[in-house]
Length: 491
Image 1 (cartoon, rainbow, N blue to C red):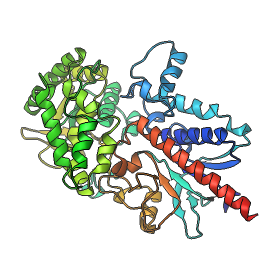
Image 2: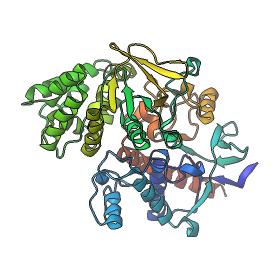
Image 3: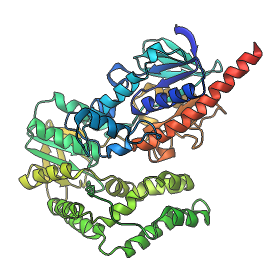
Image 4: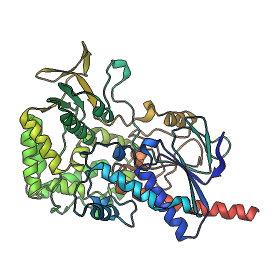
């Protein structure tokens, strides 16, 4: 069955934050250039349509860890969300709730008055895409109900798509973060991971009334604290010097130079916080670790964090200059370290977690053996003891290797040869056009957001996804205009 009986200029699969950003910017190009009519099919499940999973399905107390000034829906208006927030609340909120951002996304979408437009014609399809067939020459999106959407080009904006952290063969039945609100309060809980997702899991468990939470990580890294203000200016680890160093070397010889430059930068610092913080962390003094970082963050005295934060606008450029083997090595040797120090969390959240540590409700572990289940209890073993828990929460965010994902769409794309798994996570994507790399020369399928993480790197930052969406919207507008001209000439 041909859904709505037409050929669409574009189909967008996944309509969360990145999808809304893409549509907004395509909308701008169409009106700026007097194009149209352009037809777009938006394909997304009803529960995440125009809000996404990361924002729309969060709990009320889950916060963003990015200042509102960096979360505007389009690069031309980076402070758009901050302005919207002030107008709605009448106050400055440094780290608002994720649900607040989901409301902003919905209002941005609604504000485009798409139903009355004769230039941009939108069809909403609140369903799940399970396959794409290109055998007819242009993409045909297959929906879970069996309907088909024919389009000249397709953009995947699916958000984070990962494989399960715990294999089904282990017999473990971990609870996903989105399901915590529906369980009764456990007496003892294990939380896998110590990143941003795990932090939200811990806070949700506390709200449920859980008195004993044990979170664990193989790397042993735990969140750092966002400084009140950036005060340190890097001397050696600047984009100009990094670019100059990398351009002198071939791929395969560049990662070591980046590490060398960062070490040189640390030597310039009067009192780099990473040294004492790492000492406290490796001793297992979690409360001392956070006390130390909170005190220095309050004084805006975190030069190492400031240095890594300075890479915000060029880290993805460094990534594109590395060989695939160097990218894999970075993930293996520095991935957890980078996630910890480059992506700190709001001070108020860390202060809250530190209270739980001091109360004995939250403990950190580094397992020495895989998690086991025995007699209905989950068992975590560290170098000193064994902990038995009632539930296991998977707060890792999943494994980035897409070859074992549950998503039928991604599995089918891989089987058809329309996509290739990236060894650092997600799918291989062309860094210039955002087209999926595949066995076909041009499948007409593009990819944005976290699903392109292995290729683009900075896709956990919305400002970056918005920037990529802007570039792709411009590219697609050109394509659509050229194809319209070609059709007109043929007639």
